[in-house]
Length: 234
Length: 194
Image (tube, rainbow over the protein chains, first blue to last red):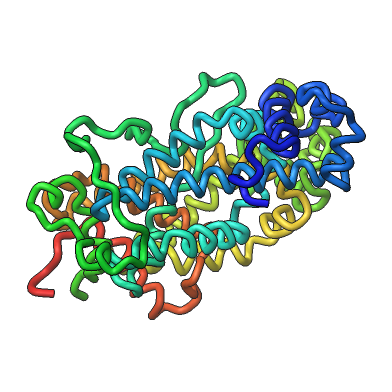
């Protein structure tokens, strides 16, 4: 069942309740009793919906959150008229979604051992190729089929940071000196955003282009050069 | 060699040896005391937080040594691109051949990775500082400051050291291409018509 089909169902209520419990007590200490109480249903109902109990429920929660994150990201990507907009909006969206995600932040702060082994070192390849596969179709119209997967890898290369125990909650993961959380004022576009047809559409393909104005060169020379894939002369 | 070590370093080295032998979970302060031929009280004097602090500092210490070795290995490179190439080749090989790291990553990733993630901030600062003087000598793209460029390159380096993705970092030709396209194209001014 997809996210949209599930809205308002009991399954979704239980998933949402579980997420609130995790944000409060963490993964380790959340029990099915807690979730049942939070969702105002019985434990038997949870077992019926998620045969396998807590493991199965946690799986469903994780899948639910990934679906939510990526459908939000897809929406930003769909609406971005230029490659630069796409990247800026995508990065701002992602850093807000991650830093504002209470359950994730709780787990990263207090139970990092449950999450980090799944995304670090060799496992990072899995994450990068998943993100790459997701984003490539959106990037292809801008940089060509060949450049798209590379660009994703470069963009996703910054390692996430976690909040230290007791440190003030940081709103941004991995921003290190720059604030990814807010879109710089001068980058904000005035007026209503034009909504683009979905990727693959011929109209989109013909209009999409790499920004070429002098201004955008000054904004992000690093980004531009990576996009253009210019090797320095050897 | 043991003669020159401070007490703190002697404890860290013993701690590292214990982790190599027993792993993070099973190493005790008692083990480290025995390996360093010091009393438990001395160890607690240097590491009042006990085992947790000791292991945290051992990880930080070995991480520092690792990147110190890396910096030494590449210091003689003739130019900046070859410095980055050598760094990637060396670091990739060193990570793969780091027996203790690989063992702990296999058996106790949950204990190691949270520490390494915290540590990575310090490593980034270290790599950045190392790179800035080199970048100051390079012809950077308009609007790119050496510090920004160093941060960009440091992040990519760290990311590729951690996992090579679709590149083969044992192949010098591929590493040369990676350095010139993805690492340097972002910061150096293009030379000539390309």
